[in-house]
Image 1: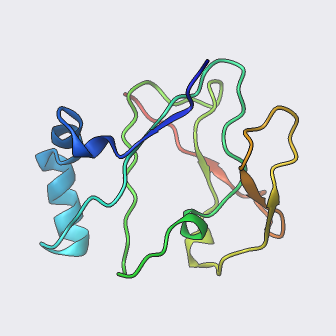
Image 2 (image 1 turned 60 degrees about the vertical axis):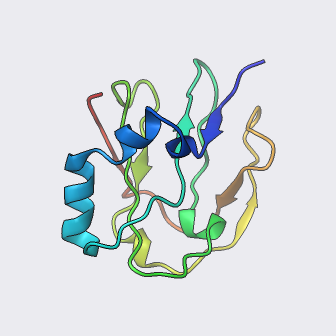
Image 3 (image 1 turned 90 degrees about the vertical axis):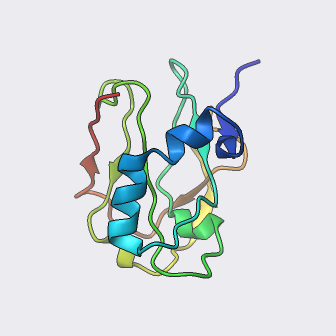
Length: 130
């Protein structure tokens, strides 16, 4: 059996130290001020040949009761177009929550939902080094 995600690893070492690294903490303090908390962490495995998530909005999955919210992505391996890096649609963070439907791609993970009423043609790859 293959896993695709592990949740809330920041609750244990060494993952908390990784998530709360001074460089990350300093960047978050500069954006959010001194009251910063880690509310969720995920380690996402992209095994060879599997689909990643479809187009989605994180806000659909989380009830954010404080604003602003900041997501931080730390790559533990190189992220390239060839190996399925993240793509983002500039400005989409200002959009309302869009209608979603079950992910219709063959072989997609059960439970994935995708946004179908937004034009993602200007999406940009997020290339990263580990």
